[in-house]
Length: 524
Image (cartoon, rainbow, N blue to C red; front, side):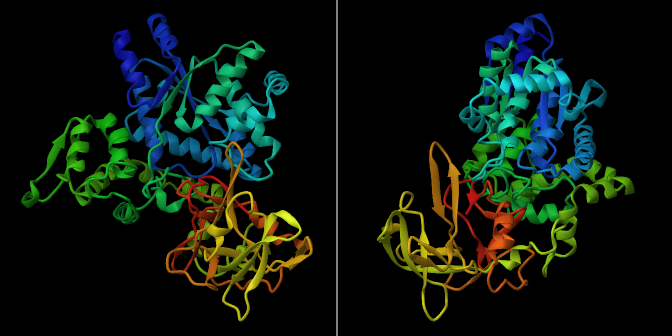
């Protein structure tokens, strides 16, 4: 294979390459050394086949490929992987990633597998972390992790260390290039800026596009409806694909079509649409753009596309499912993800958390309200005073600091989401009898959006976390117990703009609570 052929194979289907000229120069002299890292947090899903198929391309092009199981990163990212589960989750990732690679025919002996803690706790690495921290600004560290590290109102120092460690990994793994999703771009440019400041070489960065999930947004481990788990049963796969967003003729944010483009075509070089002879019979595509064109022109029906993807996907997943029938791997899965096991075993009622039996979201009295009136606080320019109907005989008075983020006109007559059992508190002389819940995110300045109830909601409608529908809320949350504050740490907005607690949707009987645009934001 000549240099041009290697370059084409390495870069095909990528969204962006930083250092393209350097890549060409290296390929003239030697094989490229590259690494892909994955933080061992939520369970890997089928979108992980996208980087797996690129790893297959890298190996075909003669690259030396290292796969990093970034266990320490998983803990630093707002403790997405608790310390006591870190070892188990890393073992799970090792088993499932290797099973994925085997299912697409990648020879494992050509790959190098490394854990972050194998080298990130060494004296030399630790000294380099200190060196880097002496030159990196807090602003740059926070900006670098904005698309990857979980964003919270009061970020932990660990999240600011995360981008620096990822940059140093390039040096300590002795690679020429790092590969990742385009959501890593800010970390990659951070590495290019700061590694030379401590005497290390700037690396090449290769970026995959982000594949849409089944709901149209990014496929995410924390958004159950957006993803297909690698161990999903065939019947569950069928259900999820049936509900997947795949509008006739619409090729934008189409997760089903994207999976064909970024996984099935690179692996098999063709794709077969299977359909009844009376609708034209089976058709084989050897060029993705032809399939995309036919779908856009509605020559391919969404149902036929979904059923054809289902067949191909089951072929990929069957070897993984079979491997994980092993009793030891079943036990490993249950031990690494105990919350998910409990969720499946007892989806109703009032499940308890492992850490503190009392801190459960059903203790919160969250309701839908309708804003009847909005006025500026007479003694505070940043505060609104609202009268809000929450389904009680009299409206509640609510004081909220939204003046800088939303107009009074936009709040008037709006349906909102309220936490109603906080202890009433005086705010500059006016008692506030509830908290108006909003999504927030730092995006070159703080952005705030009130949460949106599902269509058809009415004042007083009960809001709950999936799996905690039947629990009884406290009459009043005691301030010293800090129940809401402890639960709030795990409230967030998913990549599909759905309000969630941990991996569970926040909803009413009519559907999910959402926000307009602040993907990955916090709830307060």
